[in-house]
Each structure stands twice: as C-alpha cells, then as structure tokens.
Length: 552
Image (cartoon, rainbow, N blue to C red):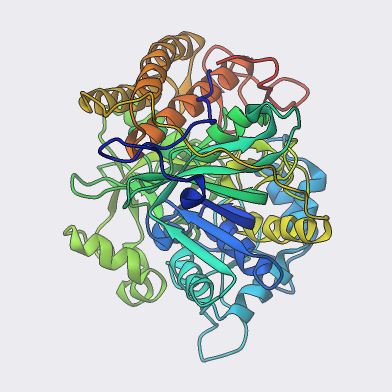
C-alpha cells in the first residue's frame, strides 16, 4: 500500500503562502497515542521524568477501557495461585499463549492492582466494609480473581486516572485529535529504522500538526468497528495496527477476533455488552422456550470460555432461525441483581427489560482483537523508538483466545514495562521534521463514497469473516477488500484528510490483515473456526505477516 509523502507544506484555507512550519510543530519526549488504560497509565508513569503528549480522538473517556464491565484478573485470594492463573490462561489460549508472556503478566498482577488502589480507584470491597477486595469469578477462571468496581470497572478506573492526568503539568492532552500516520526515518528517506513522531489532525481546528517525539507509544485500542456488530466504541478503528504496519511493524495472530457471547439485543441499544460476570455469578443461557443449551455444547456450560459460548449461541441461532438467545439471572433475586449488577440493571431497565424479573435477549458481537503488532516483553516493536501497548499489540499473552479480564491487566503490566524501558534508554536525537503538505489535494467532492465504503467493508467482514469461516468466504472478503483498498487509497491521495477518511483507511488495512491471517491458518483453534479445517494441527504456531514480505 502506498504511503502518502510526508515532505509537504500546509496551505491555509483561502490559499496564499504556507505558514511557517514552527506553527504546526510540537516537540515532546514521549508521544502517547490513545487514552485507554494502557495510554493513561503510561503517561502517568512517564510524567515525573518526561514531557508527554497524550493524543485522543475524542474525549479522554471514549476508549474501550471505559466500557469494560467485568474487571481485572489478579491472584489475590489465598486459595488461588499464580500457577492456577497461568494454567487458566493457557487453556483459554488453546495452546498458542507464550509462556514467558503469560508468567510475566500473571506474576505482576498484585502489584498492578496495588498501583491502581494507590491512584484512588474505588474497587468494590467485601460486604461489611472489610479491607479485602471483593472478587468475581468469570468464564474460564478456576477461582475467584476478578477485582472490580461494581459492574463498571473500566469506567471507575478511567475516571480516576483521567483526573490524575488532567492535573499533571508534564502531560499535554490533545483531545479531539486523530493520528494520521507515524513519521519514520524510512519514510523521510533518512535510511534509519526509527520512529520520530506522528502527523495528527486537529479535528476542531481542521489542521494537521507535526508532533516530534523521541519515543512514541501506540495505545490506540482494537478494531471492533471493522465488523457490523461490535461491543466496541466508535473509536475502535484499528488505527494503531494500520499505522504500525505502514511503519514497518509485523503483525501476529490477527485472525483471532473474540466475539463476546452476550451483547444486548435491542433495536435501540448500541454496543452494550452484558458482562461475563453475569454468567460467572449464575446466569443461565436459554432458548426462547426457557430450555438451557450450554450443557449440550460443553461440560463447563455457561462457564466455558468465550469462544465456546459464542459458537454455541451462533449454532443455536442458525439451527433454529433465532434472532437472539436469552441470558437469565432473575432466579438470583432482585436484591442480588441490584447489588452485583447495578449498571447493567439500570441500562436494561431503560430499554424496558427488568433483568431481576426476566431474561436478557443477547447475541454475539465482535469484542476484542487478540492479535496485533508484534512486541517483546518491554512493549517494543522492531521500529526503533516505537512501542505498542494494550489491544493494538500482540504480546503472546492471549494466544488463540483471551481469558476474561486479562486484557486490563496486560495494559497495566506492559505500560509499566514500556515506560521503564523508555526511562532507562538514552533519548535519541530527533531529525528536523517536515510539515504536512496539502498543496496538491482538494476538498472531497463526494463524502458519500466514504460512507458507502465503510458500510460495505463492515458488512463483508460480518458475513464472511465471522464466528464460523470457510476459505471461500474468506476469499470473497479479500476480493471485496482489495477493490475497496484501491478506491480508498485514490480518495486519500486526492482529497484532504478527515476523521472518517483516516479511520476508513485504517479499517480496510486492518480488515485485510485479519483476512490474510485467517486464510493462512489451515486449522481451527481458539477463536478461529474454519468449516474447511475443523481440527487443530499437532503444533500451535503464530501467524505472522511482515510488511517487508507481504504487500497489501
């Protein structure tokens, strides 16, 4: 895929001479792209020692981390052990987890929680005001180890950290800014393999800024919006994965897309998931007539890992022609439901569903990307000075299927590892960076093209690259994606960038990486189930695509 030439000057509205580059150039020690848990925690750890820019597309609370309901997995109970958590992670990951990454994260669980407590996160305590944190149990976990703040953990964590970030003099918040592309020595023709910052569109001012940085952290989240139905916020458009790929980073295991089994099915509900903890606390999946079906699919029934439950629901819906199935927690009583799931209860009640008295209509929806940019245990990519954290990265922790509530823990552990590496590394000099050039592009003539391409891409991914796949469906998806690639790249080359165009360009790259990875895996494993290749191979191997050898 062609890269837009960066060596340009910005032409102001109304024509005339370009303004001086200095008006659009800002220099920082570290540029953090993304304001989820990974980005916020990294910024807070760096700020006492470095000047940090924190870039976020909308407001600070718009990332996927704020939507996390269940909690954070960590071994805190005396009846639990690190080995139990390690084993549960490997089982869920279907043999593809990297043991060094699993142990690296699990062993740092308690300190990660203690750090959040020290920041002031209001985790739920045991009844009666005891000091002990209350622990949920979720699908795939052998013990109670989910630290939570009622049923809105992500929101509680994010709000706490956002307040700390806002008050720090060494952190400059660039909200309503979207990154367009990373600036690398290779793209500038300097011959080095380093990342030197990024071009970022100021959505309110409508101008592109050049952000210079000695280190850059991609923490921009996943790519759920590549699918028609998703639990992710609108900001989850694969930006970091696409930018990293264009900068020269390999990706791994992009075929493993986790579909959350229980997204609220209602015509007016947008991307609202029903937490894993509802099943963990006794919720039962039922058919419209009230019969349970999970015991026929897996001996763990409702406590089976997400991929098993999602496939079971998909099977029952297709077999019986159903629009949805039902998740029933009403038998636990109103007091229990209101105490354990106050936010879910209130949200559903707003749609006319009283979950304390009736079952919840649910369907699977795209939820989490287990693959991403390949990084090491310090969060480093092969591009010097570039780090990737959270859902944008593939650390080896999740393997072929993420164990519930391991994702926020991964964000915390790897943000600490990456920031420690940055602080321990001598800052590299940053070359002079050219400003963005819009002298050879015009305003878009038909914005409707973007909307149509966006819709076609997401429908194709949902129809052909969903929970159950075949080679024929994947090839159909790839054909359509390639046609869209050409149209989008032509549009990008000729018209001024906009938020929708930037996101669409990133989504189509991410979609192709997912499809190519899925086609390369000739087996069924974890979240990737192929009717053509229903059995797992004897040896589990990562699917790695390298931009040096693969051309999109």
